[in-house]
Length: 281
Image (cartoon, rainbow, N blue to C red; front, side, top):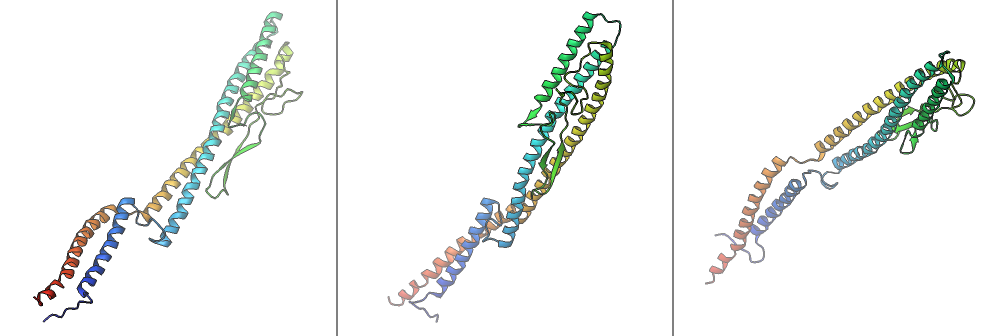
């Protein structure tokens, strides 16, 4: 005959332990399904969580790198656009100056050409002065270079060299443009001298634009690399901490069933003492 104790219900204790274990596993499965994370906190897996946090930090830092590269790229794009305008104006200036080398011109025509020359010079000066982005001008000799972040630890940079396309107001040129604001084409001789300076300036400016174009390509390539690196880091973090939702969903259903059975088992174990009372009837 089975023995009973009114002080301790062993069956109920075992059923309760099993139910508690099941509910703990169920809570974990529910957390993974709701968050999508197998490792949501350091308590889940301290080592994996620490690695994932470090990689999240690197990925976040790459956002700052991308912003820096984009900011410098925009500055270079503005400078390149302005430089192209300067190159076009220099071509117009060369055409005007070439016309002024004609010794058969009368005074009125020469004066008109000289006026046009001066207007084109002022347009070049205005373009260079306004070629700024975010307070930085790569064409007016206000900076020597511009650096962009290239790595998440801040140790690597991409450097873009400034190009001086400003027209000197002094007696001597100071940059790629070899004539000054005081240059005129008021005589055939002056126009001939100016034409040589303008041809040299056109070559210099086009070389400067080539340099800016190469810098822009480097920035674009680095941006693409940083974006791909960030995607790889994010994917790596996901591989470490993301839950297998298909597996956890199936596990969740199994645990819910097991929980229901555990509750029934506990109920049966608790009701077994009622049979003891029947002996006293």
